Length: 233
Image 1 (cartoon, rainbow, N blue to C red):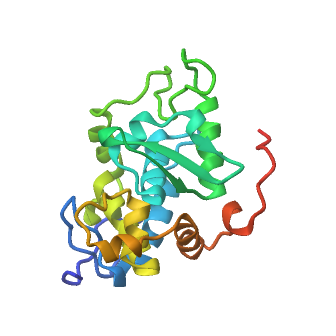
Image 2: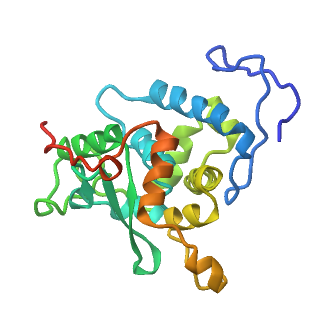
């Protein structure tokens, strides 16, 4: 819900003089009527925070906002989990759960290039995507510093953006596009507490791909049936 007509203090605020959103709880998502408005802020501020040499903190925001991954999904993401040709990312999250989510070509390219730009002692394919410039994988404590970096942007600070906030917002977008079953499949939520009818009416992978295409405005290899050629770096 919109707050009072607050005026941004920073001269570079993208919506200076306009209404700002109230901070939302970490485990909440943005109301759907504001999703497109909030998305424009994220895109503009992510690009303005981009470091010339590549910024894993910025890439983390893009990754979690697009995939709805939990924090563990970012910590464990490896080069071998990125399937550029099929346009999919394999996430390894809590409870030893493994799920695939569709991703844009731009995100996959950025993740692969970022990974290969940093040294790693791991075997080929086993390299963690998100690592420091010294090659060390990020830790859970890194996310606190990530949030501090994001909050250098007044827009992101006023929105109260965190990794879990990004996850819930992504799930909300899929739900508004494809319904509860599609958002449940996308989020990797358990069906144990749902009714038999809901389980029989569960979304198929093709339904998630369709919602992805509508959300991103980009054709997906598994939707068009045309697998991409190998990525040339």
